Length: 218
Ligand code: DC
View 1 (cartoon, rainbow, N blue to C red):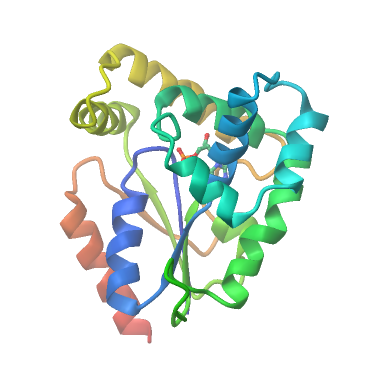
View 2 (spheres, rainbow, N blue to C red):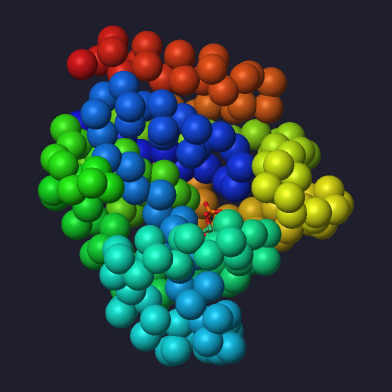
């Protein structure tokens, strides 16, 4: 079984993916990590994020191992690296270079310890439209920018990162705009995606609804 979960930043995709992955024995691929890895690798090397040919080169050479190693860096999940990821993710050549790595995961999905999974669950912006259009279930999870900024702000505070709320909100709005308006794979629901707005729903209710839909169809 393949499940895709797309939507804007901090809408609750990761939490939903983790719950569904545990319940249905699915290996999880957070595709945003591929863009964050390219963004962070370039930043650490002091490279210009606007240089598309260079970003493509970093993307072409990215491996799962490197991506996981970079994800241990405290800057990986920072707001600043989210902006870096968003910049490189708007580049068609970077997207093309990372697509195979993303698609191959569904062919033989494995957990972090190397054991086989019963399928894959993807989270990202275009996983139901471009990466896995053949997925069995597609969800598009969304919420208002203010609700998402509040969630991200709380997460950052818990991690001891003192980014002001206004900055978190303006980053989210700028990233939404870039993700929605880019020419390649813009953020939009697949025609057959189930849309879930989490602005006024707590995540447990969203998880319950998703599981009911999956169980009813299986
Ligand atoms: O989900 P995230 O915040 O880790 O994503 C980082 C950036 O990568 C975000 O600006 C959008 C981009 N992204 C994308 O374009 N396509 C994906 N499938 C996943 C993420």
